Image (cartoon, rainbow, N blue to C red; front, side):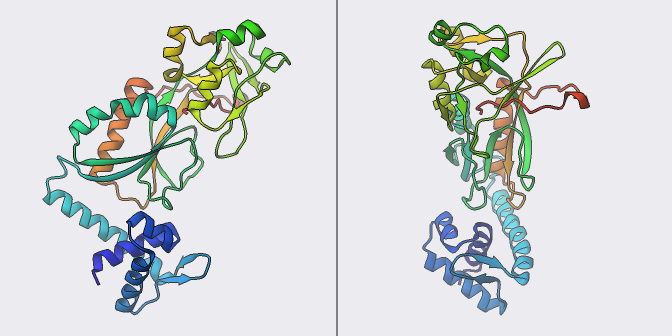
Amino acid sequence: MDRFDAMQAFARVVEAGSFTKAAQTLHMSKTSVTQLVQQLEARLRVKLLNRTTRKVNVTADGAAYYERVVRLLADMDDAETSLSAATSSPRGRLRVDGPSPLARMILVPALPAFHERHPDIQLDMGVSDRVVDLIGENVDCVVRGGELTDQSLIARHVGDLQLGVHAAPDYLARAGVPSHPKELEDTHHRVVGFLWSRTGRSLPYAMHRDGESVVVHGRHVLSVDDGNAYLAAGLAGLGVLWLPDYMSRAHVASGELVPLFEDWRLDPMPLYIAFPPNRHVSAKLRVFIDWVAGLMAQHAPVATRPPVSASATRPSSRAPTR
């Protein structure tokens, strides 16, 4: 038995809650993972996991051992990193996940410069607007817009997305140009709905001007759960959009989208990089986080937020990052 492989297999089973998921993330067979954990238990003469047909639970002894194993694996990674000079040249596989529009418009176009600087890092990038199970799917970090609801994650605030309201000229020619956000509630106006993966439903938008605040729900004939599809629906004239500036800028310049309510303000959307608290922040993860933070400093710098009075409490503005 390779003790390192056995400890790594045990840690992944605990994190994934499943031998099958652990085997998938380790690129091993389920049988091999099971044997490694069994051999580890035999060596320690301690039951580390309780197994049922549906799930795997860590025992009290297993939980205590897991905490030590995680620290030991992290120390071993640090030792190998320092010996291989990877501190100055980080290397290895990094699994990340980000919203589809942000990946398409900002992250992926900038990757050649990242890989030129860090040629030994292999990035596996999930591109979606769904909620990712970081531990179960063995994802090192996620880039996400909006306030984080999972308080168990460690998050770094890397940017604030400025938002605006837009519509296609064809849509405005049919429905008319609204002069006040509340007109979007009228029967002849439509918005494009965005289905948030956390709730499975569209959420209203809060807008502010000179002490006046309104919350707009709007009516829709289409709701989507992907930022690129959301933008495409607006460009096709299916309704009014709430967009981050980086998504709308080129289309406004080309005349494909028209800004609305430019004297109104929407609260900026915070952008975070989040990772599990038990995930070792390796050199490769650290340089990736710093790289994303540097990118967002160019495209969506962190805003200085004025204090919000108690009377101004309201739903937060949301739009696809998304």
